[in-house]
Image (cartoon, rainbow, N blue to C red; front, top):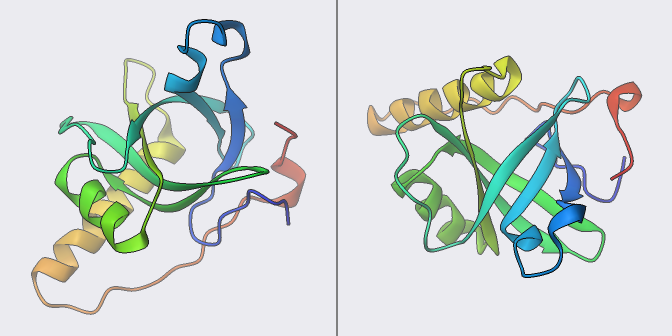
Length: 140
């Protein structure tokens, strides 16, 4: 298990944008790798300021010396802000889906939405541990 592996979110921190370190733009974006090793770019927001994008995946994260750790994945906006508050998160990372749909990220969004719907209906919320396969991990 890597230092930045999450227990419930199958994404691994892949660092920031190296080419944009000057001027502060590099800290504004972050890459995450999915189970297949594909990199996806996320915008970084403070834990209290996640925008309400209708078709976006939000990751509630905590920074560590080794990189960010994803603690929660689900819809952007109010659900992400509430999760960040409950988990005392440092940041919220948001991936807006474009024309090239990322199926593994879409699955995380659908599972997060299903958990929220179950909670709203008063049903028990299943916890399914998802992990990145060891052979799909890459160094940041």
